[in-house]
Length: 224
Image (cartoon, rainbow, N blue to C red; front, side, top):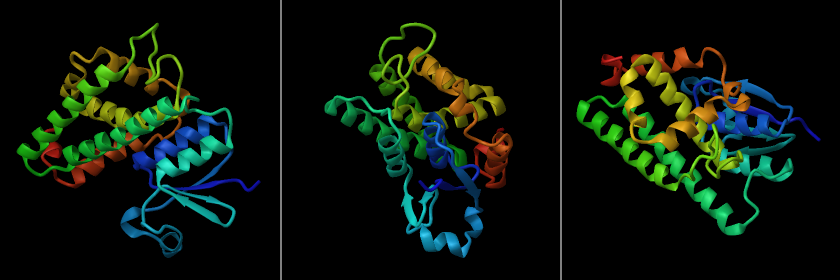
């Protein structure tokens, strides 16, 4: 079988989802980093949307992190999805919800005006309240979306929580997002302590993420 090759941008949270899945599945893979501000021609030829991640398997190409993760899950047992069809569909629904959180986070970090920044902060807080209600009660010192078992849905949230942790390091007030959200806070802590998540980004990503925000001269950049 051809060794898969993942095309990545260092700061991309969607690529990180696929890296986590590859590591959880113990799949040997290669990774190539590109600059999305200066996309090479060879990349544009294989990426219909011009986005990362892209996974190359021999002469075949897959794009979009959700599709890549489903493929990796199906081809490398055991499955990280629940076996029950309804529960599986529910997990997939909440994976889509994770993408809206990442979108809110992106807009929050790059918003030029305080009004837009504050709106996105509140949107994230409101989404946390929905997650707090959806998460099961903790049974021990760890918590995953489905309780005590790591599932594919968890890969969708880990990149968001990691970037939130970067923001907390830069401005502690961001920790207030976890106020009155004990289950969300424990879930984030559990995911961020998992080896597949810790090792899913390069060491320089945290500094690069904060610098990326500062380079865009956003409202947040002015208060970091």
